[in-house]
Image: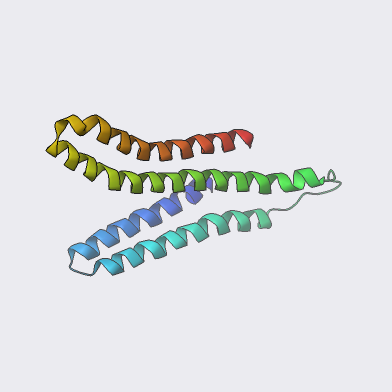
Length: 148
């Protein structure tokens, strides 16, 4: 069952990429390919969150005299999940921000280096600052995961 839960989103994403590439090669608009990608991503997100919730709701809670649950054990999975979501958001948003920064700085650095080769060191610093944003996000993500 766990194997199916892991393979199903991967198959959806792979199929959407294949269908999008095929539709663009056949001459359809890029907008339809992007819409297909977004709809498939949303389907994967729904499956990823809905299937485990439905599976946990379907399992029996136990038989006989079960140990009483305290409020700390009842909220622990929720706080772990929120911590994992926070770590994922930090890493993803920092990576996107670093990519935007490098996308703006790298062409300017290449242009400055082509005009004056002595400007390479100064230009490289600005590209490295953009990469630093992603590294800081990764560091914060690791710190969040250590607290969980």
